[in-house]
Image 1: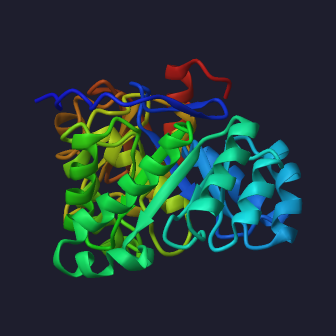
Image 2: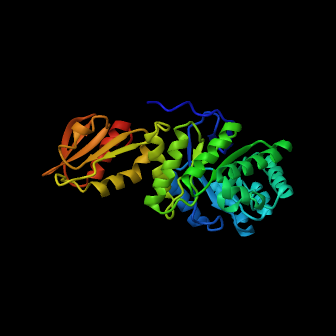
Image 3: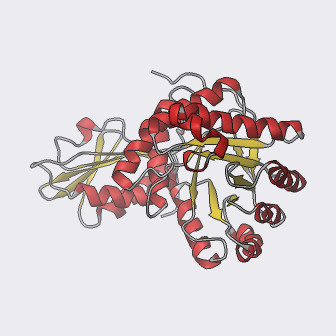
Amino acid sequence: MPLPERRKTRKIRYGTVEVGGGAPVSIQSMLTFPASSVAGALGQIGELAVAGCQIVRVSVRDMNDVDSLSGLCDESPIPVIADIHFDYRLAVAAAENGVAGLRINPGNIGGKEKTLAVAEAAAGAGIPIRIGVNAGSLEKELAGLYTTDPARALCESAASSLAMLEQEGFGDLVFSLKSSDPIVTVEANRLFSSGYDYPLHIGVTEAGPVLSGTARSVVALTMLLSEGIGDTVRVSLSGDPVREIVVAGAMLSALGLRPDLPRIISCPTCGRSHLDVAPLAERLEAVLPGYGSITVAVMGCEVNGPGEAKEADIGLAGTKKGAVLFRKGEIVGKVEGDFLEHLLEEIKKMKGKDT
């Protein structure tokens, strides 16, 4: 069953990446390195880009970070957003140093005058601002409402910032309303999207470690995306941010929102399995994003081979003497040795890439 039509929103741009206005749902992450750790940041950006990340956020904590932004942005293969808290002057300076966008939190940036100063700098640089409303850093005057109706408190914070910025003529905005509670996150974004047409960045903040964090994030994001809500996403997980991209890509692909992303079918394994499926599938998952839209199957035995993966473009099924390689459900040969290399060779042939 197809998903409902996506909510119509305004379009903004982070560099070459469009968000909202019917653009494909984009995938974001955040670096574990601050901006001043340029070598580490660029290395991680490269890994994220290969995995399918389209927009990346970086912490800007002080002027040392600001001074590093220009070089970092020049070298980055994807747009860089400066993430600033507490000191609006850092956001003003970041806007002048080549970032594709700013992210500020109205609960801690310092009030109306300082927020408007950031907006003026963003307008001068021609870049958007993401207003990030988080449950953990709401304005003090909304603390009482948050105890009784947390979703409405998040929405009112976003609406207040929006009214202030619109009054000054600044509308190049993205909003995010996040809680560590998936249901609160869903309800807050439903409320906001029912009244405003600004693009939404959706995610569950502080979701947790890989397994539980994935579950919490995918529950909330799937609910919203299946209702047509959400223009760009982040799956926030503790640890290596590359895992965020893998999860987000798999989710969007499964929902049919990103048909350009790869899909892996792999069996859960049982006593019949002749392949060590899990590490092979994980290795494949790490390299497959570079091949775009393709479905690849990794099956442990002949039972779970071509017969249960007929929709796969390319696949592998374990046998007692190695594995069989198949395309579109039809066996094309028997292989031994490094199974990942055999899969990639066949994928490259299908995609017309050089081996």
